[in-house]
Amino acid sequence: MNDDTQEMDDERLRSLLLEARPASQLPPRFQESVWRRIEKEDAAPIMQPAPFGRLQRWTERLLLPRFALASLTLLLAAGGLTGFISSADMVKQQAQERYLSAVAPNTLH
Amino acid sequence: MRRPLLILAVMLLAGAAAFFGGQRLVAYWCAKHMARPTDDLDWLRLEFRLNDAELARVRQLHDGYLPICREFCERIDTRKRELQALLVSPTNATATVEQKLIEVGTVRAQCQATMLQHFREVSQVMPPEQGRRYLAEMQRLTLGFHEQIERTMSPAATDPHGHR
Image 1 (cartoon, each protein chain N blue to C red):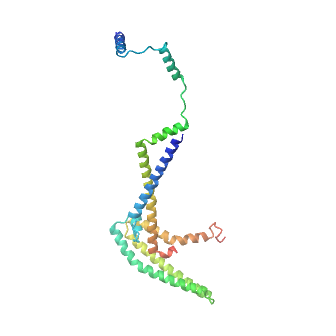
Image 2: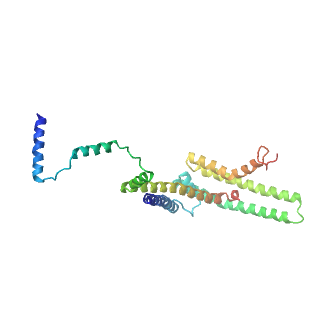
Image 3: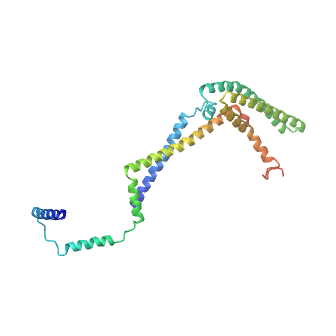
């Protein structure tokens, strides 16, 4: 019952569309050739992406604002952390040398 | 084909600039804000996390010890100069040189004993755990140097410089 109603609706819709915009004549065996092309596309092997294509996609992803910003923030934070660790060690080392030269100058020479 | 490589190069450069820029910036900040380059006791504050009251007590001991330390340094320097003069003198007698070496060693030993006593006193005004760590570290730093030299010269040493 539903199928009958739908077919009737399709018919009405088709006639309405034809009235609204008269289409030019389709070439012979148009539908068949469309299906053949679709089948051909489906059967075609999936092409492996070329190395540069993959690189391009990757760089394009890198250029996404949120990804670029996150990467730069991460690198900035990592740099800051290593800077803090190395600098704190250096500051302590210099301070230790100053203390030793004040309380035990003879042990340094 | 070159465009992705160019973008990648720019991204790498930007990343490196962010990393090293961050590193330099924080290092500069640390050097400016963490250290007190004019304070001899800054290391104790940084390494042993002393508060102001503990640092004030250490400073009092430190200020009391400095003139004694200076006096020992002068005495050692005087003995060393005398030893040097004896060594370059054409009439240097072995006995006199030996006597001077003993004098240098004796003053040095007295200096080290006083120094160790000072370290002990300082360690006692610190929180117990930090005090123990300070004392061990100072003994390692001030007495460890000679131990290292002596160890390399001992018969057990495998170094060719040792007396085998």
